[in-house]
Image 1 (cartoon, one colour):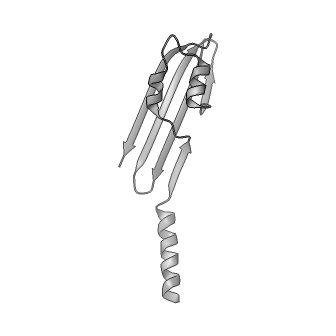
Image 2 (cartoon, rainbow, N blue to C red):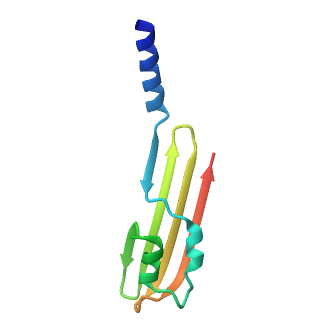
Length: 103
């Protein structure tokens, strides 16, 4: 019985050591291609991508951003992000996207 308990404790320690962290909501940067600069609206973006992770407003523009990151103790990391800039009328004027997968 003692040997079995040692195996359980060892498995639990290994699981904690190989833990992982996830931040944000998974987003597909390729979806940004469905939005057209000068045509798409803020409502179009939210309908396509869901609620943004962050919203930054100033007098002239609004930036909506969606981001996701995941990593583990073994050095594997993934991230994805979309940033969309809208003018005061809510029309898309710029878009950027990124995706990283490190092993």
